Image (cartoon, one colour):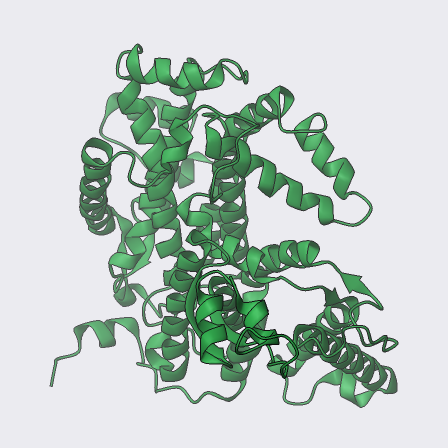
Length: 532
């Protein structure tokens, strides 16, 4: 940067440094006088809050790593030593442990704001994708960090989750053994996880830098979803938004401090205060709360799927993406495009029929070529893994699924309703992920009353009653009672279906056909308009 573009500062030391390394000029340009939309609400605070939490996690993590021992025989005791013998160790650990939860809270609100106000739309697609990459890196870092204390839930959570990758064709077993460093979760696993847990936060910091860089290239979105048209629509970032962000950060820290000092263990699992024991399995293995919606999606797939449905769905998604953006897709004007569309639709239809037959158990024992799941199976285990990662991948392609020209949900009534319903469904999926898969919410028994009563008491005597209503042999056989129930797995399946339908059906259709309200002419007119 030449001297002509450099600013002058009254402070002698700052001026001396900046004349040789214009870092203060850059900071003032990007964070001082940087033009920012004048109508930000407090949802925009959570980007700065998330950055503060990242810095907090890195600093406390570095100090904790100085006292931690990555050995299965010593890891649990080293954590206890940090809590009891290291000066301020208990505080550092509680800051770090609860910081993970509050980091995710800030990021989840940040993502919701971007979804509600359309911050993923052109020209901010790459900004949104970088944010999703940060989210994925956070999930990986938090998961392997949860393993490090080497409690019961650490060991068994690592065993269950990493074992899922064995379902990946061809490379699954090799991948799992590479992560484990052997044939089970043991000392090599802990060593590798510790190294990755120390490294990944710095990778996150690098991607955050790119995220902020992309933000300053495209500029910030705003609640109205319209671009600033001049200086009258913006304010300098400092002091207006530094003061606003500081206030929001202080309020956030107050809630954060409450959990640190008064409820430090409320967001964790009590089983993790029991040393890891590979010979004792916890009654209910669950991840941390911020993984629960995706854990519910993982468990929702309990049946084999048909590979034709997956292949056909991908083809149709690619073809429909052009339909979303154009009134007359180009591929429909060529014979090859029409043939590809028919093949994709046919594969998806065959796959859906085969899966439907399997789910309702009509196809049991029936071999229907190219239709039944047995013809080209994707196991329930692999299907769950694909569904879990697919639910996050949908966030990456969201900018191309929503083709509506209006960004903000303020001016899209139907989109606003479905975003709220989507948010509720994520909370319900989180609840489903926290409960046992076989938990029954409602059930009824159809058939003989006495047989149903016997079945309700554990099934004792139900078989005998089905043979003879009076206990005498040779009388007419009665049909076994039928139990209809709604359990936790079905709850997860229902809202998993809505989750995917929101991205793949609702958002594209609304983007194509929803009629939006009229947008204001400019930001300052909407902000400064007199209330009637």
